[in-house]
Image 1 (tube, rainbow, N blue to C red):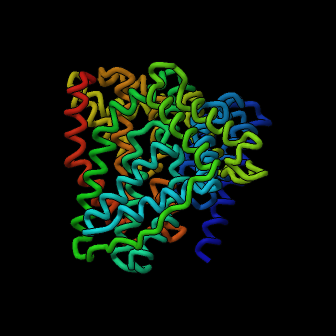
Image 2 (image 1 turned 90 degrees about the vertical axis):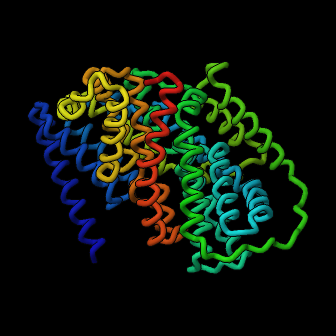
Image 3 (image 1 turned 180 degrees about the vertical axis):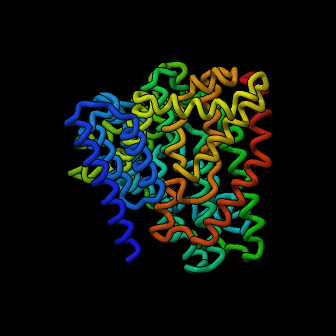
Length: 457
């Protein structure tokens, strides 16, 4: 019943927006209030998941079109930007991993090495999850791929459903594939949204290698080490995991070999994009074209049925929302409010950087991690003027902020993992809060030191 009432409330809000949009269309006027309310309603629908994220994105586009909030080239800009196509290519590669059986082979490799003391098991599973982030750009795809593999491994290891050992394994793998991936440009939706908005606003998209250099040592490796340490302490009472019975794996099929070569080439091109100048988006799309090509055996006969389009629409909607925030002047108004907060930090680069990261982290529980770059990126030039920091530093400070996630609902892949039962709710929430607090206390100072070493502050 509660879900029904929530849906009815959402329907009422959407109907009111449609009426307001129709009135504005007929009058030919342009009110900033309609832009404000459609942005607010869309962000709240994404944050509460009261309706599917892709549906909220469609509502946003329709209201913007009817109400003349912005030209189609603005609110539809997410469909032509880099972010949506990064998600698309990740979905295609993920589908190929499942279709060819290479995913199962990776799972068998995991089972072969994940044995011994439970802290060692947690470490190996978490490292495996992080490594997968380099192979699969889609965070949602990795969750769907890892969840059954981890569940099967836990069952084989004698860790039944509902046990603390199983909870530790699932948290290590799924948190390990999500949190450190914030330091890898195409590996999570917030990163892709940030890149897409940097492109549409003309602020300049960082290369894969530069983003990796700036963020992965602390936000990636540091968060991975912190996660392993936290879970090792939390689940220290779990008994050691025995080694599984050794079964020689079958030879790799032709399709598996083709996909392995394709993945190796794709990752190599991602890592060297600063040399050849081709963005991660189009490297990924080239790999997707190969996977989709008839006769390669990398996807079934009707390959597009294997591709999840909902995340693509969601990301495109978020990027379009950010573009509307900038076009309508909402970003300027928000920038004026935040300027008053950060302007006292002008002349103190470290304090300004931390302050901007704190603003991003504080917005996360309200608008989700994906919504943070959508709101802050369009107003980055205003914040740069107020703090005296370069625009690139202001935009990259968001990563430290939106990667500090307090509750799983802030991140769609983690929210989905909870919904499908892959994560134990109580342990997931507790570990998420603890990880966020430890991140602020330990990793934020390390991140500042790393930026100083790089000469970025």
